[in-house]
Length: 85
Image (tube, rainbow, N blue to C red; front, top):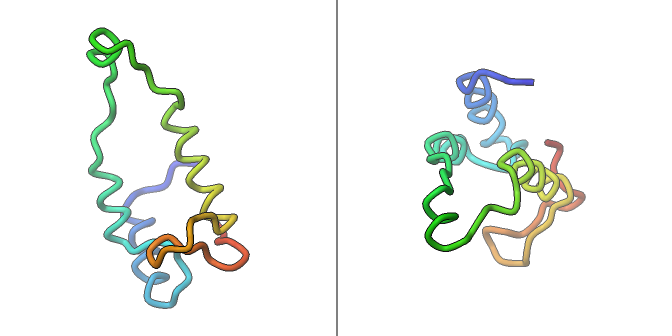
């Protein structure tokens, strides 16, 4: 279900300081500014093609958040029991 970015950001801004969200609002801002991949040139020149669709990569990311996946490094330590996404 598509949501307006402003509504999602406002929710993150309220939830982040309360430790209810897995990422700061600035992370959402950064993700929304990411360029889309156009792999035509890499496919032609290098024979490379993406193995996942963007929707699959986001689904994998969300699954990792829910499960609390991540190595035991300070920025990547998974939340105990995962995070509701």
